[in-house]
Length: 279
Ligand code: DGL
Image (tube, rainbow, N blue to C red; front, top):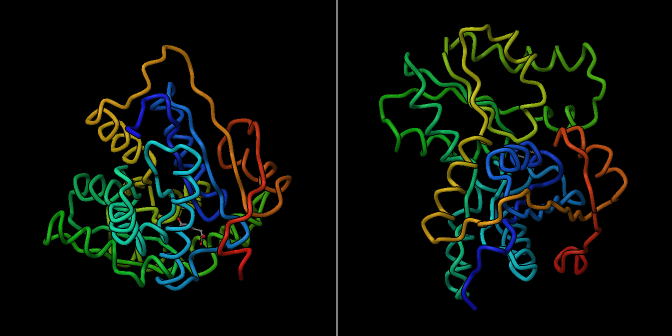
């Protein structure tokens, strides 16, 4: 069946972090309907192997296509880094002609275009740094730009657990920023969808002169272009809807989620994914 403009845009992440990306989509493309899946049962993705992440991404994408998605946003850096290419191949081989948008290319393009010094920093989970995906994306955008990568092993779980934020979070953030200060970068990619929540701490530590780049705005632009190219932008004049699925407890997703989305969460439904049930 051909895709229709009335179908929802699907967005997934390891949990609530991708809601920072959904937030940008809701603001930039308000007439679309959205279906968000947070794989909270398997959070964090940042310590998973590339093979595990590829399996998760394929399983979730199939679930979202069954739910009627017209485009899939991989709103997780670890999953985008490990699985975007494999996922596209898998869907194509299965006869699914849908666009899949990851977070790495949009963030890299903004960072490389905006850097004056050609010295760009990356804060990301260990899985994302180990994949080398940002290195490759920066090199493809401009081989003369230097990327200084910092693997932040516990920052996403700390952000998720730590509210209200205390001095320990500030110290953790300061520690991860130290190599970037030493490298004198002028632009820093927030290579994890949780990190926009600590943007004020990062900005204070790195200084006003450093530009923080998160993927949300660039992803929204990529989604708009991809939908427009296929004439799939929802033509309605009023606001669309958004709803949620998660693989662990619904109540904690609602509680945490409204913090990340900065908007009230409506319907949240628990789902079991096949591979998880089999495990
Ligand atoms: N949302 C994930 C990402 O952007 C980070 C959290 C996790 O480790 O699952 O990489």
